[in-house]
Amino acid sequence: MGKGTQLLIDMGKLWERYGDSYLKGIQSTLILALVATAMGCLIGFACGVLNTIPTSPKSHPVNRFTLTLVRGVIRLYVEVFRGTPMVLQAVFFYYGLPYVTNNAVKFTSVWLASILVVSINTGAYMTESVRGGILSVDPGQREGAKAVGMNHYQSMISVILPQALRNIMPQIGNNFIINIKDTSVMFIIGFPDFFAAHRAATGASYLYFPSAIVEMTGYLSLTLIASLLLRWVERLMDGKSSYDLMVRDTLVTPADIQRHPKLPD
Image 1 (tube, helix red, strand yellow):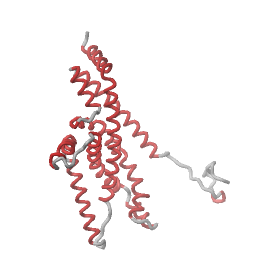
Image 2 (tube, helix red, strand yellow):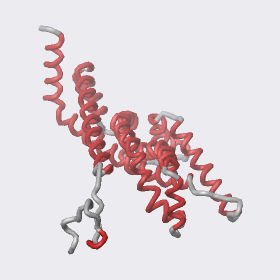
Image 3 (cartoon, rainbow, N blue to C red):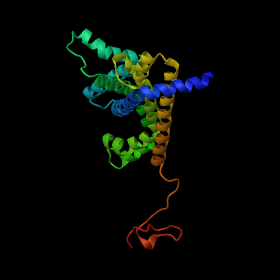
Image 4 (cartoon, helix red, strand yellow):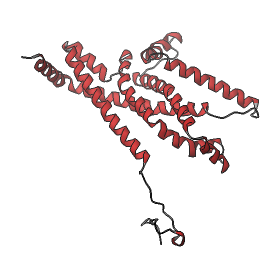
């Protein structure tokens, strides 16, 4: 019997015995990745917007000081969480906080700790992505919004952020795919994800390599499906490649412009 055949047999045995455990791990991994990516995006958008609020010498000194302080805190947050491994962040929050606070602050749920760690980590990366996305919008868009009487908040919500969102959509998808894989480090605090199911199966069967192949195949399938879905969402956001100009007044409608069939005559 060849090694390839034996490998397939061992993988079949693993799936027969631990298939339910693998599937539950996949479910936990997807839930954690989705929730943490969504929360990380909210954190990133909030911090990215704060980082791009304009200031001038005419601004009130208190406002300038407050904004400078907030930006300093955001910069510290981004550098710390981008510059340290997520596995160590998980250890610090789950095991370190009770130690340094004498059990005054501790997590009673491994789910809550995992969501918090992955969300904050994702938010640190998204902060810079959002800032770059906002700065990539043509300055004329801001000037146009200001010209029609919009303040900074109104122009950001109605004009800048919708365009920035499309620009950073690939990065959001990239972070989601990364989170699908990187949530595997949460096993260090006992999170029951796909990787934890793999470790449990290998501990009981000693079939490490066959289980690793099952694991790799599962993660690859998840990331490929996620990539296809995210590209579909990007195409939806792009809209049609061409549009017909529609007007209501038939007296000023050029002959080469069509009227929308749903518009009233």
